[in-house]
Amino acid sequence: MKKGEVMNSYIERVIKEVESRNNNQPEFIQALKEVLTTLEPIISSSDKYEKNAILERMTEPERIIMFRVPWVDDNGKIQINRGYRVQFSSLIGPYKGGLRFHPSVNLSVMKFLGFEQIFKNALTGLPIGGAKGGSDFDPKGKSDNEVMRFCQSFMTELYRHIGHDVDVPAGDIGVGGREVGYLFGQYKRIKNAYEGGVLTGKAISYGGSLARTEATGYGLLFYMREMLKEHGNSMNGKTVTISGSGNVAIYAAQKATAMGAKVVAMSDSNGCIYDENGINLDCIKEIKEIKRGRIKEYLECNPNAKYIEKTGANSPIWNIKTDIALPCATQNELTLEDAKILVANGVIAVGEGANMPSTTEAIDYFLEHKVLFAPAKAANAGGVATSAIEMTQNSIRYYYTFEEVEQKLDTIMTNIFKACKQAADEAGISGNYVAGANIAAFKKLSEAMIAQGLV
Ligand code: NDP
Ligand code: 2IT
Image: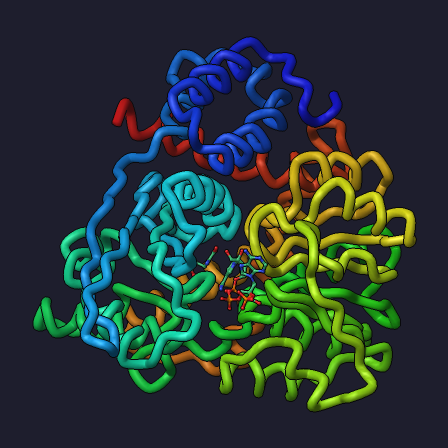
Protein backbone atom coordinates (compact mmCIF):
# COMPACT_ATOMS: atom_id res chain seq x y z
CA MET A 1 0.00 0.00 0.00
CA LYS A 2 1.19 3.48 -0.84
CA LYS A 3 1.85 5.71 2.15
CA GLY A 4 -1.04 8.09 2.66
CA GLU A 5 -3.71 5.67 1.42
CA VAL A 6 -5.62 4.54 4.47
CA MET A 7 -7.34 1.21 3.98
CA ASN A 8 -8.29 0.27 7.50
CA SER A 9 -11.61 1.61 8.81
CA TYR A 10 -10.39 1.85 12.41
CA ILE A 11 -7.38 3.95 11.40
CA GLU A 12 -9.59 6.08 9.19
CA ARG A 13 -12.09 6.71 11.98
CA VAL A 14 -9.42 7.69 14.52
CA ILE A 15 -7.77 10.08 12.07
CA LYS A 16 -11.12 11.78 11.45
CA GLU A 17 -11.89 12.03 15.16
CA VAL A 18 -8.49 13.44 16.03
CA GLU A 19 -8.68 15.90 13.13
CA SER A 20 -12.04 17.27 14.18
CA ARG A 21 -10.94 17.56 17.81
CA ASN A 22 -7.65 19.31 17.05
CA ASN A 23 -8.49 21.19 13.89
CA ASN A 24 -6.19 24.14 14.58
CA GLN A 25 -3.12 21.96 15.17
CA PRO A 26 -1.65 21.26 11.71
CA GLU A 27 1.77 19.97 12.84
CA PHE A 28 0.19 17.58 15.32
CA ILE A 29 -2.23 16.25 12.69
CA GLN A 30 0.62 15.86 10.19
CA ALA A 31 2.76 13.84 12.62
CA LEU A 32 -0.14 11.70 13.67
CA LYS A 33 -1.27 10.93 10.11
CA GLU A 34 2.28 10.06 9.13
CA VAL A 35 2.32 7.40 11.83
CA LEU A 36 -1.23 6.07 11.62
CA THR A 37 -1.25 5.66 7.85
CA THR A 38 1.74 3.31 8.09
CA LEU A 39 0.23 1.04 10.76
CA GLU A 40 -2.20 -0.75 8.46
CA PRO A 41 -0.26 -4.07 8.42
CA ILE A 42 -0.29 -4.42 12.19
CA ILE A 43 -3.73 -2.91 12.90
CA SER A 44 -5.36 -5.23 10.37
CA SER A 45 -3.72 -8.26 11.97
CA SER A 46 -5.92 -8.25 15.11
CA ASP A 47 -9.07 -6.64 16.49
CA LYS A 48 -7.42 -6.22 19.91
CA TYR A 49 -6.17 -2.76 18.92
CA GLU A 50 -9.63 -1.39 18.26
CA LYS A 51 -11.18 -3.24 21.22
CA ASN A 52 -8.63 -1.68 23.57
CA ALA A 53 -8.90 1.79 21.95
CA ILE A 54 -5.15 1.78 21.45
CA LEU A 55 -5.02 4.47 18.76
CA GLU A 56 -7.48 6.75 20.57
CA ARG A 57 -5.36 6.56 23.71
CA MET A 58 -2.03 6.87 21.95
CA THR A 59 -3.10 10.10 20.24
CA GLU A 60 -4.42 11.82 23.37
CA PRO A 61 -1.76 13.23 25.73
CA GLU A 62 -1.95 12.01 29.32
CA ARG A 63 -1.55 15.60 30.53
CA ILE A 64 -0.86 19.07 29.13
CA ILE A 65 0.51 21.85 31.30
CA MET A 66 0.45 25.48 30.12
CA PHE A 67 1.66 28.34 32.24
CA ARG A 68 2.62 32.00 32.35
CA VAL A 69 6.32 32.87 32.46
CA PRO A 70 6.87 36.44 33.70
CA TRP A 71 10.39 37.91 33.67
CA VAL A 72 12.14 41.27 33.56
CA ASP A 73 14.47 42.24 30.70
CA ASP A 74 17.72 44.21 30.99
CA ASN A 75 15.84 47.50 30.51
CA GLY A 76 13.63 46.76 33.51
CA LYS A 77 10.63 46.04 31.28
CA ILE A 78 8.25 43.20 32.21
CA GLN A 79 7.98 40.41 29.61
CA ILE A 80 5.38 37.64 29.54
CA ASN A 81 5.90 34.35 27.70
CA ARG A 82 3.94 31.13 27.63
CA GLY A 83 5.39 27.87 28.93
CA TYR A 84 4.33 24.31 28.00
CA ARG A 85 4.91 20.72 29.00
CA VAL A 86 3.03 18.03 27.10
CA GLN A 87 3.31 14.81 29.13
CA PHE A 88 2.21 12.55 26.35
CA SER A 89 2.91 9.04 27.54
CA SER A 90 4.34 7.34 30.64
CA LEU A 91 3.70 3.84 29.28
CA ILE A 92 7.26 2.58 29.32
CA GLY A 93 9.04 5.04 31.62
CA PRO A 94 9.00 8.55 33.08
CA TYR A 95 7.95 11.28 30.63
CA LYS A 96 11.08 12.20 28.69
CA GLY A 97 11.84 14.76 26.03
CA GLY A 98 13.37 18.14 25.36
CA LEU A 99 12.42 21.76 25.92
CA ARG A 100 12.31 24.12 22.93
CA PHE A 101 12.66 27.91 23.23
CA HIS A 102 11.67 29.47 19.90
CA PRO A 103 9.07 32.10 18.89
CA SER A 104 7.30 29.51 16.68
CA VAL A 105 6.44 27.31 19.68
CA ASN A 106 2.71 26.71 20.14
CA LEU A 107 0.50 23.87 21.33
CA SER A 108 0.44 22.16 17.92
CA VAL A 109 4.25 22.12 17.71
CA MET A 110 4.56 20.86 21.30
CA LYS A 111 2.02 18.08 20.68
CA PHE A 112 3.61 16.89 17.44
CA LEU A 113 7.00 16.74 19.14
CA GLY A 114 5.57 14.95 22.18
CA PHE A 115 3.77 12.44 20.00
CA GLU A 116 6.88 11.64 17.94
CA GLN A 117 8.90 11.35 21.13
CA ILE A 118 6.80 8.41 22.39
CA PHE A 119 7.70 6.34 19.35
CA LYS A 120 11.32 7.48 19.24
CA ASN A 121 11.87 6.67 22.88
CA ALA A 122 10.29 3.23 22.46
CA LEU A 123 12.72 2.52 19.61
CA THR A 124 15.74 3.20 21.84
CA GLY A 125 14.85 0.08 23.86
CA LEU A 126 15.35 2.10 27.05
CA PRO A 127 12.71 2.75 29.76
CA ILE A 128 11.59 6.28 28.82
CA GLY A 129 8.12 7.66 28.13
CA GLY A 130 7.39 10.61 25.81
CA ALA A 131 7.06 14.35 26.45
CA LYS A 132 7.97 17.75 25.08
CA GLY A 133 7.91 21.25 26.43
CA GLY A 134 9.19 24.74 25.92
CA SER A 135 8.19 28.32 25.37
CA ASP A 136 7.66 30.96 22.71
CA PHE A 137 10.59 32.81 24.33
CA ASP A 138 13.23 33.80 21.77
CA PRO A 139 16.77 33.46 23.17
CA LYS A 140 18.25 35.23 20.12
CA GLY A 141 19.81 38.56 21.02
CA LYS A 142 19.12 38.12 24.76
CA SER A 143 21.88 38.62 27.33
CA ASP A 144 23.01 35.73 29.55
CA ASN A 145 21.26 37.45 32.46
CA GLU A 146 17.98 37.70 30.57
CA VAL A 147 18.20 34.02 29.61
CA MET A 148 18.94 33.16 33.26
CA ARG A 149 15.99 35.16 34.59
CA PHE A 150 13.70 33.57 32.02
CA CYS A 151 14.91 30.05 32.86
CA GLN A 152 14.49 30.66 36.60
CA SER A 153 10.93 31.89 36.11
CA PHE A 154 10.13 28.98 33.77
CA MET A 155 11.42 26.45 36.32
CA THR A 156 9.61 28.15 39.21
CA GLU A 157 6.41 26.83 37.65
CA LEU A 158 7.68 23.68 35.91
CA TYR A 159 9.43 22.18 38.98
CA ARG A 160 6.17 20.92 40.52
CA HIS A 161 5.43 18.79 37.45
CA ILE A 162 8.82 17.07 36.97
CA GLY A 163 11.17 14.74 38.85
CA HIS A 164 13.71 12.02 38.07
CA ASP A 165 11.03 9.31 38.19
CA VAL A 166 8.23 11.56 36.89
CA ASP A 167 9.34 13.69 33.95
CA VAL A 168 12.87 14.46 32.78
CA PRO A 169 13.27 17.42 30.38
CA ALA A 170 16.39 18.14 28.29
CA GLY A 171 17.45 20.46 25.47
CA ASP A 172 16.09 21.08 21.97
CA ILE A 173 16.09 24.16 19.70
CA GLY A 174 17.23 27.18 21.73
CA VAL A 175 17.95 25.09 24.83
CA GLY A 176 21.53 23.92 25.26
CA GLY A 177 24.07 23.62 28.07
CA ARG A 178 23.65 27.22 29.24
CA GLU A 179 19.87 26.95 29.62
CA VAL A 180 19.94 23.48 31.21
CA GLY A 181 22.41 24.83 33.77
CA TYR A 182 20.15 27.73 34.79
CA LEU A 183 17.10 25.44 34.88
CA PHE A 184 18.91 22.87 37.04
CA GLY A 185 20.20 25.50 39.46
CA GLN A 186 16.70 26.83 40.06
CA TYR A 187 15.17 23.34 40.44
CA LYS A 188 17.79 22.39 43.03
CA ARG A 189 17.24 25.62 44.93
CA ILE A 190 13.45 25.17 45.10
CA LYS A 191 13.58 21.47 46.02
CA ASN A 192 16.54 21.69 48.40
CA ALA A 193 17.66 18.33 47.01
CA TYR A 194 20.28 17.23 44.51
CA GLU A 195 18.19 15.22 42.09
CA GLY A 196 20.78 14.91 39.35
CA GLY A 197 18.53 12.88 37.04
CA VAL A 198 15.75 15.48 36.83
CA LEU A 199 17.26 17.06 33.72
CA THR A 200 19.62 15.73 31.08
CA GLY A 201 22.06 17.57 28.88
CA LYS A 202 23.81 18.86 32.01
CA ALA A 203 27.43 19.96 31.87
CA ILE A 204 30.03 17.38 32.89
CA SER A 205 30.98 19.36 36.02
CA TYR A 206 27.63 18.68 37.74
CA GLY A 207 26.38 15.33 36.50
CA GLY A 208 26.20 15.46 32.70
CA SER A 209 27.23 12.60 30.46
CA LEU A 210 30.23 12.63 28.19
CA ALA A 211 29.11 12.42 24.54
CA ARG A 212 25.58 13.77 25.21
CA THR A 213 26.48 16.95 23.29
CA GLU A 214 27.61 14.90 20.30
CA ALA A 215 24.98 12.17 20.62
CA THR A 216 22.18 13.21 18.25
CA GLY A 217 24.50 14.06 15.35
CA TYR A 218 26.75 11.05 15.90
CA GLY A 219 23.73 8.78 16.28
CA LEU A 220 22.30 10.03 12.99
CA LEU A 221 25.51 9.04 11.23
CA PHE A 222 25.60 5.61 12.90
CA TYR A 223 22.09 5.04 11.58
CA MET A 224 23.09 6.30 8.11
CA ARG A 225 26.10 3.98 8.14
CA GLU A 226 23.88 0.97 8.87
CA MET A 227 21.27 1.94 6.29
CA LEU A 228 23.87 2.53 3.58
CA LYS A 229 25.66 -0.73 4.48
CA GLU A 230 22.40 -2.64 4.09
CA HIS A 231 22.20 -1.30 0.54
CA GLY A 232 25.86 -1.96 -0.29
CA ASN A 233 27.03 1.62 0.18
CA SER A 234 28.87 3.80 2.72
CA MET A 235 29.51 7.42 3.75
CA ASN A 236 33.08 7.26 2.50
CA GLY A 237 33.73 9.73 -0.33
CA LYS A 238 30.19 11.10 -0.35
CA THR A 239 29.24 14.76 -0.65
CA VAL A 240 26.93 15.86 2.18
CA THR A 241 24.73 18.91 2.79
CA ILE A 242 23.41 19.58 6.30
CA SER A 243 20.75 22.15 7.12
CA GLY A 244 21.04 23.99 10.42
CA SER A 245 24.22 24.78 12.31
CA GLY A 246 23.13 24.03 15.83
CA ASN A 247 23.82 21.11 18.13
CA VAL A 248 22.55 18.34 15.84
CA ALA A 249 24.00 19.75 12.61
CA ILE A 250 27.49 20.41 13.99
CA TYR A 251 28.04 16.91 15.37
CA ALA A 252 26.42 15.26 12.36
CA ALA A 253 28.97 17.15 10.26
CA GLN A 254 31.81 16.05 12.54
CA LYS A 255 30.92 12.35 12.34
CA ALA A 256 30.18 12.47 8.60
CA THR A 257 33.66 13.92 8.08
CA ALA A 258 35.19 11.25 10.33
CA MET A 259 33.47 8.61 8.15
CA GLY A 260 35.25 9.97 5.07
CA ALA A 261 32.47 12.16 3.66
CA LYS A 262 32.81 15.82 2.63
CA VAL A 263 30.30 18.27 4.13
CA VAL A 264 30.02 21.12 1.62
CA ALA A 265 27.07 23.15 2.94
CA MET A 266 25.40 24.14 6.22
CA SER A 267 22.77 26.76 7.02
CA ASP A 268 20.85 28.82 9.55
CA SER A 269 17.47 30.49 9.25
CA ASN A 270 18.98 33.37 7.21
CA GLY A 271 20.83 31.40 4.54
CA CYS A 272 23.48 28.82 3.76
CA ILE A 273 27.19 28.62 3.12
CA TYR A 274 28.79 26.47 0.44
CA ASP A 275 32.45 25.51 0.70
CA GLU A 276 33.40 23.12 -2.09
CA ASN A 277 36.54 21.91 -0.30
CA GLY A 278 34.64 20.88 2.80
CA ILE A 279 33.40 23.04 5.65
CA ASN A 280 35.86 24.00 8.39
CA LEU A 281 33.96 22.88 11.49
CA ASP A 282 36.20 24.75 13.92
CA CYS A 283 34.96 27.97 12.30
CA ILE A 284 31.32 26.90 12.57
CA LYS A 285 31.78 25.93 16.22
CA GLU A 286 33.43 29.26 17.00
CA ILE A 287 30.59 31.18 15.29
CA LYS A 288 27.70 29.15 16.69
CA GLU A 289 28.83 27.71 20.03
CA ILE A 290 30.94 30.62 21.28
CA LYS A 291 29.92 33.84 19.51
CA ARG A 292 26.26 32.81 18.97
CA GLY A 293 26.60 34.51 15.57
CA ARG A 294 25.20 34.04 12.06
CA ILE A 295 26.46 31.51 9.52
CA LYS A 296 27.28 34.30 7.11
CA GLU A 297 30.30 35.06 9.34
CA TYR A 298 31.90 31.90 7.89
CA LEU A 299 33.07 34.13 5.03
CA GLU A 300 35.49 35.77 7.49
CA CYS A 301 37.01 32.31 7.94
CA ASN A 302 37.10 31.40 4.26
CA PRO A 303 36.48 34.30 1.86
CA ASN A 304 36.35 31.78 -1.02
CA ALA A 305 33.22 30.12 0.34
CA LYS A 306 29.83 31.22 -0.97
CA TYR A 307 26.96 32.60 1.10
CA ILE A 308 23.46 32.19 -0.32
CA GLU A 309 20.83 34.30 1.42
CA LYS A 310 17.41 32.72 1.99
CA THR A 311 14.95 34.90 0.09
CA GLY A 312 11.76 32.86 -0.29
CA ALA A 313 10.05 30.21 1.80
CA ASN A 314 12.42 27.42 0.76
CA SER A 315 15.93 26.92 2.07
CA PRO A 316 18.58 27.48 -0.63
CA ILE A 317 20.63 24.55 0.71
CA TRP A 318 18.49 21.93 -1.06
CA ASN A 319 19.41 23.40 -4.46
CA ILE A 320 23.01 22.28 -3.95
CA LYS A 321 23.95 19.00 -5.64
CA THR A 322 24.67 16.32 -3.05
CA ASP A 323 24.84 12.55 -2.50
CA ILE A 324 23.48 12.74 1.04
CA ALA A 325 21.12 15.35 2.51
CA LEU A 326 20.75 15.68 6.29
CA PRO A 327 17.99 18.10 7.37
CA CYS A 328 18.98 19.06 10.95
CA ALA A 329 17.20 22.39 11.57
CA THR A 330 13.43 22.29 12.06
CA GLN A 331 10.04 20.89 11.01
CA ASN A 332 8.82 21.10 7.41
CA GLU A 333 12.09 22.62 6.19
CA LEU A 334 12.28 20.20 3.25
CA THR A 335 9.28 20.38 0.91
CA LEU A 336 8.15 18.43 -2.15
CA GLU A 337 9.73 21.12 -4.32
CA ASP A 338 13.06 20.63 -2.53
CA ALA A 339 12.76 16.84 -2.78
CA LYS A 340 12.29 17.08 -6.54
CA ILE A 341 15.46 19.16 -6.89
CA LEU A 342 17.45 16.80 -4.67
CA VAL A 343 16.29 13.76 -6.66
CA ALA A 344 17.00 15.48 -9.98
CA ASN A 345 20.50 16.19 -8.66
CA GLY A 346 21.06 12.51 -7.86
CA VAL A 347 20.65 12.32 -4.06
CA ILE A 348 21.22 8.76 -2.77
CA ALA A 349 20.07 9.07 0.83
CA VAL A 350 18.30 11.48 3.18
CA GLY A 351 18.66 11.30 6.96
CA GLU A 352 16.45 13.32 9.30
CA GLY A 353 18.40 14.82 12.21
CA ALA A 354 15.63 17.32 13.00
CA ASN A 355 12.11 16.30 14.04
CA MET A 356 9.71 16.02 11.07
CA PRO A 357 11.93 18.14 8.78
CA SER A 358 10.46 16.65 5.60
CA THR A 359 6.86 17.26 4.62
CA THR A 360 4.72 14.17 4.04
CA GLU A 361 4.76 14.85 0.29
CA ALA A 362 8.56 15.09 0.29
CA ILE A 363 8.88 11.75 2.11
CA ASP A 364 6.51 10.06 -0.34
CA TYR A 365 8.50 11.47 -3.26
CA PHE A 366 11.80 10.16 -1.86
CA LEU A 367 10.32 6.69 -1.25
CA GLU A 368 8.75 6.57 -4.73
CA HIS A 369 12.13 7.47 -6.25
CA LYS A 370 14.00 4.82 -4.24
CA VAL A 371 16.00 7.32 -2.24
CA LEU A 372 17.13 5.70 1.03
CA PHE A 373 15.25 7.54 3.73
CA ALA A 374 16.12 7.54 7.45
CA PRO A 375 13.08 8.87 9.40
CA ALA A 376 13.56 11.24 12.32
CA LYS A 377 12.10 9.16 15.09
CA ALA A 378 14.63 6.42 14.39
CA ALA A 379 17.58 8.36 13.01
CA ASN A 380 17.74 11.14 15.62
CA ALA A 381 17.00 8.92 18.63
CA GLY A 382 20.65 8.98 19.68
CA GLY A 383 20.16 12.20 21.65
CA VAL A 384 17.42 10.94 23.89
CA ALA A 385 19.06 7.51 24.15
CA THR A 386 22.18 9.18 25.53
CA SER A 387 19.98 11.23 27.85
CA ALA A 388 18.74 7.91 29.23
CA ILE A 389 22.38 6.86 29.66
CA GLU A 390 22.94 10.13 31.54
CA MET A 391 20.01 9.22 33.83
CA THR A 392 21.56 5.80 34.42
CA GLN A 393 24.88 7.36 35.45
CA ASN A 394 23.07 9.77 37.79
CA SER A 395 21.18 6.85 39.41
CA ILE A 396 24.25 4.76 40.00
CA ARG A 397 26.33 7.83 40.92
CA TYR A 398 29.05 6.95 38.48
CA TYR A 399 30.50 8.14 35.17
CA TYR A 400 31.18 6.32 31.93
CA THR A 401 34.06 7.38 29.68
CA PHE A 402 33.42 9.08 26.34
CA GLU A 403 34.33 5.85 24.55
CA GLU A 404 31.94 3.80 26.70
CA VAL A 405 29.01 6.14 26.01
CA GLU A 406 29.81 6.35 22.30
CA GLN A 407 29.98 2.56 22.08
CA LYS A 408 26.61 2.20 23.80
CA LEU A 409 25.16 4.83 21.45
CA ASP A 410 26.53 3.02 18.41
CA THR A 411 25.00 -0.28 19.57
CA ILE A 412 21.62 1.39 20.23
CA MET A 413 21.53 3.06 16.79
CA THR A 414 22.56 -0.19 15.08
CA ASN A 415 19.75 -2.00 16.91
CA ILE A 416 17.24 0.70 15.97
CA PHE A 417 18.14 0.28 12.32
CA LYS A 418 17.77 -3.51 12.66
CA ALA A 419 14.34 -3.08 14.26
CA CYS A 420 13.18 -0.75 11.46
CA LYS A 421 14.45 -3.15 8.81
CA GLN A 422 12.90 -6.20 10.43
CA ALA A 423 9.49 -4.54 10.82
CA ALA A 424 9.55 -3.32 7.20
CA ASP A 425 10.58 -6.76 5.93
CA GLU A 426 7.85 -8.51 7.96
CA ALA A 427 5.24 -6.07 6.63
CA GLY A 428 6.35 -6.83 3.06
CA ILE A 429 7.65 -3.30 2.44
CA SER A 430 11.41 -3.84 2.59
CA GLY A 431 13.39 -0.61 2.43
CA ASN A 432 10.54 1.53 3.82
CA TYR A 433 12.13 2.48 7.13
CA VAL A 434 9.44 5.12 7.76
CA ALA A 435 6.80 2.43 8.15
CA GLY A 436 9.35 0.10 9.75
CA ALA A 437 10.14 2.57 12.54
CA ASN A 438 6.47 3.29 13.23
CA ILE A 439 5.43 -0.36 13.29
CA ALA A 440 8.37 -1.48 15.48
CA ALA A 441 7.64 1.25 18.05
CA PHE A 442 3.89 0.70 17.93
CA LYS A 443 4.27 -3.03 18.65
CA LYS A 444 6.11 -2.35 21.88
CA LEU A 445 3.85 0.50 22.98
CA SER A 446 0.58 -1.31 22.26
CA GLU A 447 1.76 -4.39 24.15
CA ALA A 448 2.54 -2.23 27.20
CA MET A 449 -0.79 -0.45 26.88
CA ILE A 450 -2.81 -3.65 26.82
CA ALA A 451 -0.81 -5.10 29.73
CA GLN A 452 -1.45 -2.05 31.93
CA GLY A 453 -5.23 -2.00 31.51
CA LEU A 454 -7.44 0.99 30.85
CA VAL A 455 -5.46 3.97 32.14
P1 NDP B 1 19.80 24.35 17.98
O1 NDP B 1 19.04 25.42 18.64
O2 NDP B 1 21.14 23.99 18.51
O3 NDP B 1 19.98 24.67 16.43
C1 NDP B 1 18.89 24.87 15.61
C2 NDP B 1 19.36 25.14 14.20
O4 NDP B 1 18.25 25.07 13.33
C3 NDP B 1 19.96 26.53 14.05
O5 NDP B 1 20.94 26.51 13.04
C4 NDP B 1 18.74 27.35 13.64
O6 NDP B 1 19.06 28.52 12.90
C5 NDP B 1 18.00 26.38 12.76
N1 NDP B 1 16.56 26.67 12.80
C6 NDP B 1 15.77 26.64 13.90
N2 NDP B 1 14.52 27.01 13.59
C7 NDP B 1 14.54 27.30 12.29
C8 NDP B 1 13.54 27.75 11.39
N3 NDP B 1 12.28 27.97 11.79
N4 NDP B 1 13.91 27.91 10.10
C9 NDP B 1 15.20 27.68 9.70
N5 NDP B 1 16.17 27.27 10.52
C10 NDP B 1 15.85 27.08 11.79
O7 NDP B 1 18.83 23.07 17.99
P2 NDP B 1 19.19 21.53 17.79
O8 NDP B 1 20.34 21.37 16.87
O9 NDP B 1 19.24 20.92 19.13
O10 NDP B 1 17.86 21.00 17.09
C11 NDP B 1 17.71 20.92 15.68
C12 NDP B 1 16.62 19.93 15.35
O11 NDP B 1 16.98 18.63 15.85
C13 NDP B 1 15.24 20.22 15.93
O12 NDP B 1 14.24 19.76 15.05
C14 NDP B 1 15.21 19.35 17.20
O13 NDP B 1 13.90 19.06 17.59
C15 NDP B 1 15.94 18.13 16.69
N6 NDP B 1 16.52 17.24 17.69
C16 NDP B 1 17.39 17.71 18.62
C17 NDP B 1 17.96 16.85 19.53
C18 NDP B 1 18.97 17.28 20.52
O14 NDP B 1 19.48 16.43 21.25
N7 NDP B 1 19.34 18.56 20.58
C19 NDP B 1 17.60 15.42 19.55
C20 NDP B 1 16.73 15.02 18.47
C21 NDP B 1 16.21 15.92 17.60
P3 NDP B 1 18.91 29.96 13.59
O15 NDP B 1 20.06 30.09 14.52
O16 NDP B 1 18.95 30.92 12.46
O17 NDP B 1 17.59 29.96 14.29
O1 2IT C 1 13.86 15.56 20.13
C1 2IT C 1 14.59 14.98 20.94
O2 2IT C 1 14.69 13.75 20.98
C2 2IT C 1 15.39 15.81 21.86
N1 2IT C 1 15.34 17.03 21.78
C3 2IT C 1 16.20 15.15 22.95
C4 2IT C 1 15.33 14.84 24.14
C5 2IT C 1 16.06 14.34 25.35
O3 2IT C 1 15.36 14.09 26.33
O4 2IT C 1 17.29 14.18 25.35
